Length: 252
Image (cartoon, rainbow, N blue to C red):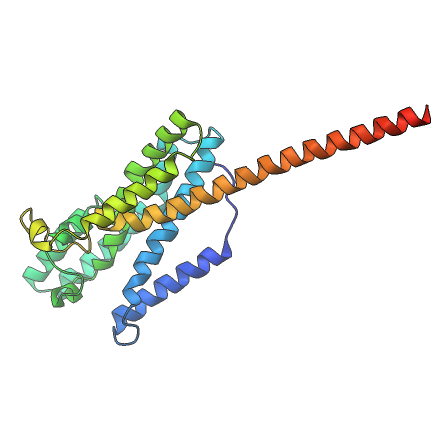
């Protein structure tokens, strides 16, 4: 894996995002817009994962197998343990219908599909949502779904264009198209069973894509600066050589 430098300011943003969501869930009156911390987290995730993948692609070290192995090893063991603990505790205190609903959510969560399941069941701000102790894991499902398709697009772009310059406008187009879907009436989605768009992947991908765009844009600027510095150094060396040659001739 290519070296990715630690960014303390990103951890700071993460902390703010997490704390804002926690405060919102403890008491929405404390921080009414605290749920927007999820959006911040999505942007950060898109930025970080794109930075890492694009570096590995450029260094010819990227592997789908290694990428997904890292994701599984990092998330799945603790994730499954958490689901098991919640399930055991809930079986002791939940009434039958509540536990059955939780069990279905857990089942979808193990496949990182909980956001899609919840989008057919309840709203994020509904009263019933307060009875679901693993409601928050829908955001993890969105991230993992994004990680399924985005690395593939990035690899194709690098192989075809040998650069991310062409890919950046495509990301902007995707962001625009996904945002357009938010203007489609809710009743249209209800026809296909989507009762809550808050959880749906394509409503959240724009945030992840914004992070990806920022990462690629930073990388492009870095490459441009390197090329500019190289050209400047070449010109400086040429001028230095000319002056040296002139001095030698004069001395002779």
